[in-house]
Length: 218
Image 1 (spheres, rainbow, N blue to C red):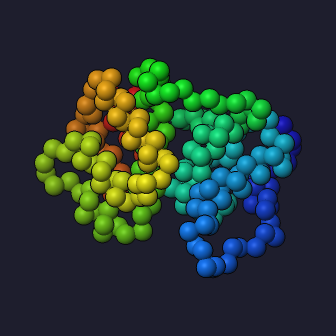
Image 2 (tube, rainbow, N blue to C red; image 1 turned 135 degrees about the horizontal axis):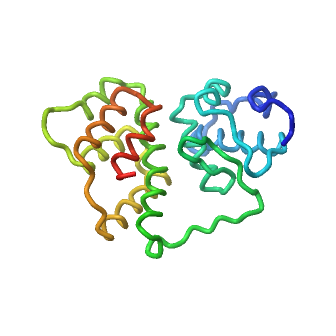
């Protein structure tokens, strides 16, 4: 691994690139998390990071890049899908072999434990985006505890109302959820669902991976 300081060098990658100006076709512009994923990919290449090397912790990475934790989480998931990173719970983002091809099996062939692991990644990223929604009043209106018992489907539909529910990540999450249901995945514990809703409502991004793991029985 190169001796260059990753935290310092990361902010230098892409330096001097102009910010895209407002044009007549705003829908053609990539989403911020997609631009961020490309930026981090450039950093990995520029620093010559090797498989097994770790990126800086997410909290510091988000601060250095000047983005929210929610946007960073989506970028890391995008890089994981591309096969450039592996995001390990408690171990951070680890660089993968750029030559290794990642072939996702059909969901029908995937065992339940692999589906659950994949959905933990999609749920954590979507929940982080929802927790970063700037309208705290809307988050509270959708997710505040009303004293009743709420199931995961109800809470998760509220979470998706706070994000782009037509995104690839959201559609993948839906496909995973449906396949897990077909395989008879057990329902989530109401207390865990309540804790997940509260974490999103209060914008507690750092507690979301654990809350998602509890909901999925991890």
